[in-house]
Image 1 (spheres, rainbow, N blue to C red):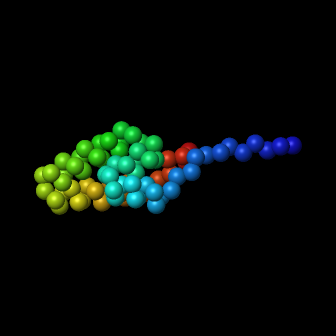
Image 2 (image 1 turned 90 degrees about the vertical axis):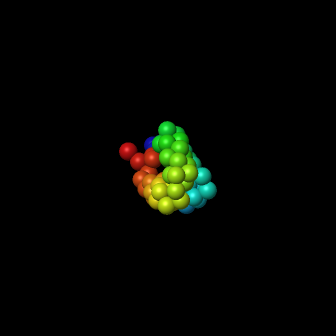
Image 3 (image 1 turned 90 degrees about the horizontal axis):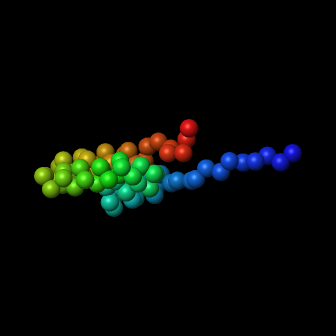
Length: 74
C-alpha cells in the first residue's frame, strides 16, 4: 500500500522577518497575506512620515506579526 503524502509549502520565519525589516509588509505578503502586507506598508510609511517614533513602533509590530503564525497550518 502506497501512502500519499500531502505536501505543504514551506515558509521561513527568518525570511518573513528579514523581508519585513527591509520593506514593511513584505513578510506578510511572503506568507500569502497580500492585503495585510499592503496595509502594513501604507500605515508604516504614514507613521514614518508623521514622526519617526510612530513609524518605528508600527514597523516593530509589523515584523512581529510577520514572524507569528503558520500560514499553512489548519
